[in-house]
Every structure is written in structure tokens, then in C-alpha cells.
Image (cartoon, rainbow, N blue to C red; front, side):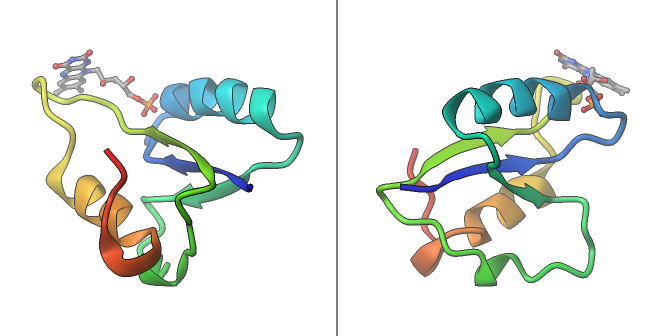
Length: 82
Ligand SMILES: Cc1cc2nc3c(=O)[nH]c(=O)nc-3n(C[C@H](O)[C@H](O)[C@H](O)COP(=O)(O)O)c2cc1C
């Protein structure tokens, strides 16, 4: 089982919270930064056995659609465990 943090955090607050949770589960969790425009999130391999923190801020009561789309890509077979 691996631990991963999937994070969007333009000013760092959301990331701090995700780090507290992720590091509670594992000393060195894998971090996936949704703001990395060059990243291929489809190459991130997350399985059903892994523990994942998905941390995205809310703007106007909604998570940014692009962040949700990238988070969905960041797992095997492009499905999200929700
Ligand atoms: C235009 C705008 C709208 C926001 N709307 C919400 C909201 O509906 N609910 C909420 O809890 N926070 C809202 N926030 C606060 C952001 O979610 C907050 O700034 C967020 O923690 C930033 O995260 P970061 O420090 O990881 O970048 C809003 C912020 C901005 C600038």
C-alpha cells in the first residue's frame, strides 16, 4: 500500500493540511501537484490498495473543474474511487 497526496494549492494552505494527513499515514507520501502543467497525470499509478488524500480548495462553493479532471486522470484506468 502506498500513500499519495493529490493536491491543488495555489497559496499553500490546502497543501499544508494534505501534508499533515499524508505524513500521518506515511513518512514520505507521493505528492501529485495538479498545478503542474507539464505533468502527465495518466502516468500516475494509484491502485485500490493505496491511501490517497485529494485536497482541492473551493472557489464559489465548487472545486475547479480542471483540477477534478486531472485528479481523475491520476489513477489507473482513469476512474476515481469516490
Ligand atoms: C474568489 C474566491 C472564492 C472562494 N470561495 C470559497 C468558497 O466557496 N468556500 C470556501 O470554503 N473557500 C472559498 N475561498 C477560499 C479558498 O478556497 C481559499 O483561498 C483556499 O484555501 C486557497 O487554498 P490554498 O492556500 O491551498 O491556495 C474562495 C477564495 C476565492 C479567492
